[in-house]
Structures are given as C-alpha cells and as structure tokens.
Image 1: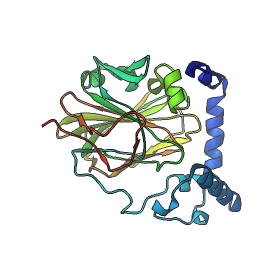
Image 2: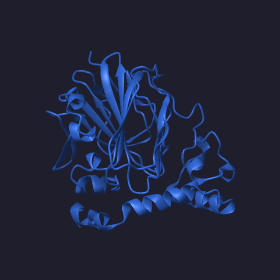
Image 3: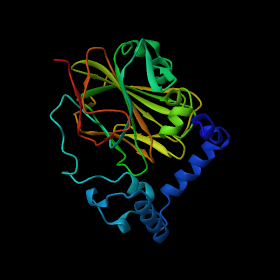
Image 4: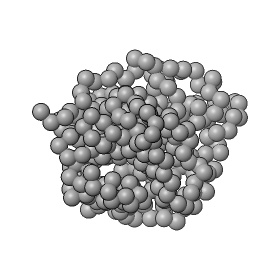
Length: 282
C-alpha cells in the first residue's frame, strides 16, 4: 500500500475530537484505572522505567504525570559538543535548508516561512542554514531540552491540523510539519538566532514550555505571539525547555555556517537527549 493511501483515513478522522478526548483521559486521576492504563502502556511500548527518577508506576496520579516523568540525573550524560540532541527519539531528516525549503521526505519539502507561521523576515535568517527534524514515539522520554545556550526572544503559536507525525504520515502528507498545530520558539545565541519548533499531532493533548506553562489548549484559530525581548529568559545547554503530552516532533532551524552535524547521524537512526548533534564549523 502506498503511503498516500495509508494516510487517507487520517483526512476523514475527527482528529481534534479524538485529541480532546485523549487529553481528558490522560489528565484523569482515576486511581487503580490510571495505574492499569500506565502499566499497559509500559508493557506495550517497552518503556524502561529504570531510567525514571520515580520508577513506581502506582505513584503517578494521572497518565500525563507518568508520560512527562523526569529521568534520573545520570540517565542522559551530556556530550561536550557545541550542540546536543534535545530529545529522545529518532531522526526524521536533517541537513541544509535549500533556498528556504526544508526536506520532509522523498517528494516532499515545505518552506521555513510556512513552518514559523508566515513570518518571512524570521524565516529568511535560515534561508541557507540547517535543519533537523526529530520524531518522538510514544515510548520515548517526552521532555525537550536546549541544544545549546539561548536567550528566548519570541514564542509563536500557529494553529493547524492534527495529523499523526509518524514516518508513514511524513511520507504521505505534503508539508506535514507546516500544516500541523505547532509552537515556534525563537532564541538568540552566541552564533545568532535559532528556532526550536514543537509540532503537535493526533492525540497530543497539549504542549508546554517552562517559561509559559501549557500553551494549548485552549486552541485558537488565530496565530498568537508572545515577545520576551524585555525579559532575561536564558536557558543553558541541556536545560529543559518544554514537553509534549503524548508523542510528536521537534524541528530546529540554524543559520548558515553554524552547524556541522554529527557524522554518525542518519535518517531513522535512534537518538538520545544529550548525545552530540554537531559542532560549529572549524
């Protein structure tokens, strides 16, 4: 079956209603029922609870509390490279931004302008830069960390669809990551600006950042923006910057002549938060 045919049912599903329902279930504090749901999830997806700061399944009051669990302090050593991987997951794609176009999958690209919500001035800063797209599956750790030091300047909520973001859907839905709901976080750093975008998906109940808290819901039909130019919100490499409630994708943008990616990286390769993502050019 072709990827286009495989994703056709997603066009017909009531994705927002499913996402709202999933969010309510995940937030529910249902005692033994919650524990049974968590225990089933751990077994189905082979979640390694030995890495969790709290490995006692029964102690989590809600599924979301379990899903956004912290890891042990020694679970993810931080590489000494200039840029570290910000999440656990798998590499979807990475490489150069070609005249403002970001490669999604064979036959599919989308514009950096579309990704950031239509701000061409912002997107132009990455026109010939680099990008990395990382997919978080349900079994992965779902907190997002900083790839390098950065000072927050803007956050943009972009409304959109709620397609799945798994590899089959990435191959079958044109412009997927610029179509789905997303939260675009813009930082300044020693080498210039960079963007870290949290992309929502079906049954991703919400996305949150450490400086704002839960960004969605509520879900708006309009683009919303917050400016932080007058605030000194500085996050160090490796610090938590946000989290997903259920799996999704992170898309990063870096300026030209900034990133030399880890030579061991390749599409579909599993990655872990804290491992080397790359370095500044020599």
